Image 1 (tube, rainbow, N blue to C red):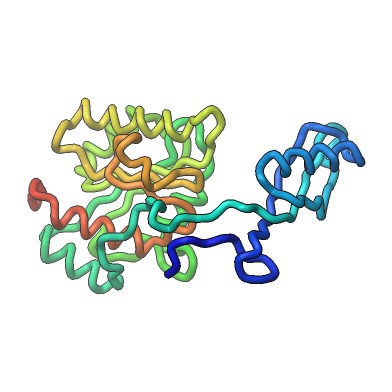
Image 2 (image 1 turned 90 degrees about the vertical axis):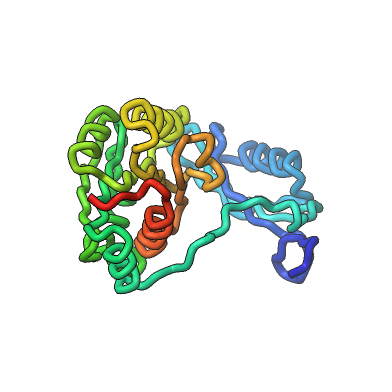
Length: 248
């Protein structure tokens, strides 16, 4: 892989990018001019407004196409890379049975006022996501899906009652950083209630950055496109290598 890269549009290295955004201006020529000005200030030059569409009376949606001069330095890219193998359902069941000698208990929920259960259901429910069955499919996993709008105290109480090995929290609502604040509140509550014996804490949602785990106080963060198999493989890896894992 090359170290220095530029975006690709029509020809290699031409720097062409496509950007969409909304401005609080009525649709029309002045709105298009405002969108072009913004794109120019973002470093897109020349910038072409290839699409604009009114959203109500006072807002306009734009698609802008143009060239940027910025160069990507791949050596400066920082991401969380998967450090564990992706296992098949059979391998996961075998690993859990061998390491824990009991079922691995997973409690999942959408906390706070978040009512969007699509993400947590995709990971937990047997129907799964992207052609993979959810965690309910694994015979050595016991899954408790608490659904939406679960308060942090309720989550902590239920996790303790179920003797949860892992707690999965999904957050979709991001206004005023609600997803960050809710997750930080959750992790703090588990630390206060259970200390070092707290379950594995996992957060997921389309606006989460996997690099935020430390900031959020959780063990792992999963972003958009995560599949049930990835989560199950991580749980097995993390829980079977923890020094304090004790069979019930």
